[in-house]
Every structure is written in structure tokens, then in C-alpha cells.
Length: 336
Image (cartoon, helix red, strand yellow):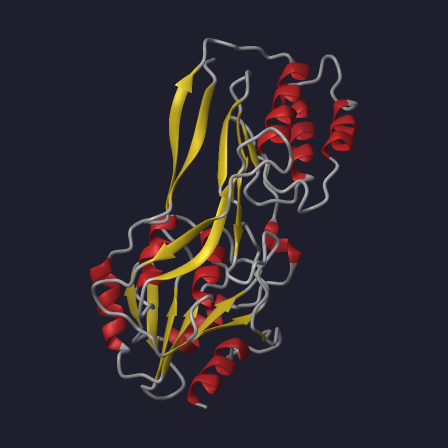
């Protein structure tokens, strides 16, 4: 099995993130459980980006889980031990992947789901709502002065023409609501493109650095990430951005970038985090892995890897069957 090593490419001018293959080593296949365990632990030790921030004793974790690796273990048993070790990082961007299982930390379990999609789609989007994948949108609040847009991922297919058409529908509103509750992320290019339609001028929206040495605190210098306004429709009136614990990865990057703009207010619950971009490789036995290798800081110098707090905390009423208290609060705030 060939071992493939990847490096994360960060293009600061366009905020593009991708993985680039840089070299392939000679065949290093082995199914030895101890060798695979030690290889995974060391890769994390030298490249993971949040040990110090989260006060993680990775050496102690090594000893705890190394003691569980026994002679004669099945692949499934070994996978569980190694997956549990990675889950100690409590990071939704950390995974171990085999042909029979995937380890996954459930970042969205940090807090309640602050949305009932059935209520949103039935009573706010409605039958006359627009579906322009991935966006669903409509006027809300019984008038035409507030627009509402919801989407559950950044699928990598957003276009400027699509966004222009959507925003032109709401150009005469007092404000719009953008709902990224339970948006688990996706393509960073979508995130950048969408943010560009809410800017009046070029702006630095956050700062980032990448793990570049073997020490737990060996990083590159912080670099400014800026976005330029789109050449099409740009909406710069009031915007309320709705978030919850299911808002993760590109959803959190979107939240960080948007909250740097003066006309944007974040409302709802803290996001699920995921502010470190993932990179990975392959174990000698063929299993693959990934973990966070960057850190992202907002313009106030905050590192919100574990979740971005809202400007206004607003939770739904779990007993409600026809209303969403977060959307209603945003409508009222826009109309003030």
C-alpha cells in the first residue's frame, strides 16, 4: 500500500482551500496493529493544530490507548481503539476511515438543535417559496419588507448569477435573514462567493495560520484573509444570520466572515466550531485519516474553534408547533 502525503494549499487572495499531492513514498504496507497505532499517533502529534488551545495531553492519551492494543486483536477492535483515541480531540474535522467503519466526533451534540425544519419549511418558506438549490427563500413576516434564505450546506455549486437572482428579489426589503442552522459546511469556494455578495468594499474577514513544525505550537505567521465584493448584486442592508450547534466548518467560516461586516448580526446559538481546515493521509494498513492543521482567528483576535457565540442569544421553543422564535426575533429586529 502506497503512503500518500498531502499538504494544504492556502490561496489567501481568493480564500481557496484544497489538498495537493506533493509526493508518494515507496511501498510501506504493514498490518501490524502497533505500527499503525504509533504511526497515527505521531502524525497527529506533529501536525494537529489545537493541542495547546484545548489543553490536550497527547502523551497521556497515547499511553491510555496504546495499552489497549493487544496481540491478536481483530481489525474492528483495533479500529475502535484508534478511533476512540482520535475522538479525544473532540474535533468534527478528525476522522479515521476504513472500508468497514468511520470514526466521527459528533460536534452537534454539544448543544440542542435550535431549529425544527418542518416548521421552517411549512410556515416560513411555504408552498410559494423559491427552491434554487441549495437555497430556499421567501418573504416572511406577512409582508414584503423582510426576506428569508435558508440552506443546509455549501455544495460547491453556487454561482454568482444564482445569488444575484435571489438577492434581486429582496433588493427593496428592510433586511434579510440568512439561516445556516444545521449547515454542516462544504466547499469553501461557495462560502467566499456568497460572502462577496454582502460587502460594500474589500475587507479582511479573518486571519489564519497553518501548522508548519513538529512542536505543538509551531505555526506560520497569521495571514490576513480578505474578500472583494462581487461584481454583481451586493446586499448591504440589515442582515441577521441564524446559527446553532449544527453550524460547522464552512458554516462557521461563513459566520466568522459575515460577523466582521458592520451590517450583520449573528442570532441564535453558538456554532459547532470547526475553524481548523482538515488535511490527512494514509496509514500503512491502508486506512485513511484526517485532522485539523490550521487555526482561524476573527478580527477581534478570538480563536473560536469550539464554537462562535452569537451576538444575540435566541432559542426556539421546543413546544411550538407553528412558529420559530429565532426567525420571529430576527424579523422584529429588522423592522425596528
